Image 1 (cartoon, rainbow, N blue to C red):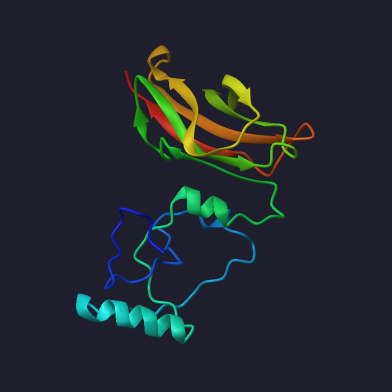
Image 2: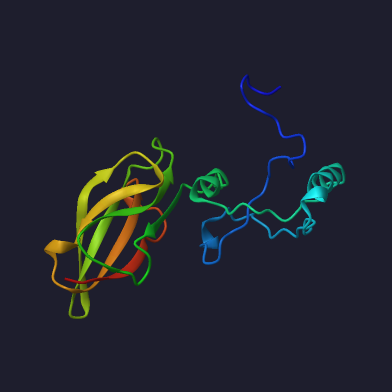
Length: 185
């Protein structure tokens, strides 16, 4: 039954149950048992779309999803046996940055299981990298949101690393998610 004041479009197809991964999505973040799915392409004419969706649902056939999976949907698909899902989505690998900017991404975990996450800045020093924690450690999960702030204006121009670390029982949960960025003046 529709909510009061809302209109129901009788010709609209039902809501989608699937989404597709955008090009470049890190598939390693999907549950280990995730499998590729074959979809039936929907008709191009809008008059047949609703009937096609109804036929597909009645016959257990999935039409090609038009919605792109976002971090919120990917977090819902998280393998319950996986302790955490974590990645930096902005800045992106190899991006040139300046000024003050948020480091955006996902650090999704059960707070009772994982101690915290933190963002570290890697400063190259010859063949070594010196790691410095940015801001504080965080004990609450974040899904597709700000993880920390980067104050690039206080750093000399050059190549740096950002890494997202999730910690459980004083050990890393998997390998840190690391990207390279370039800071310009």
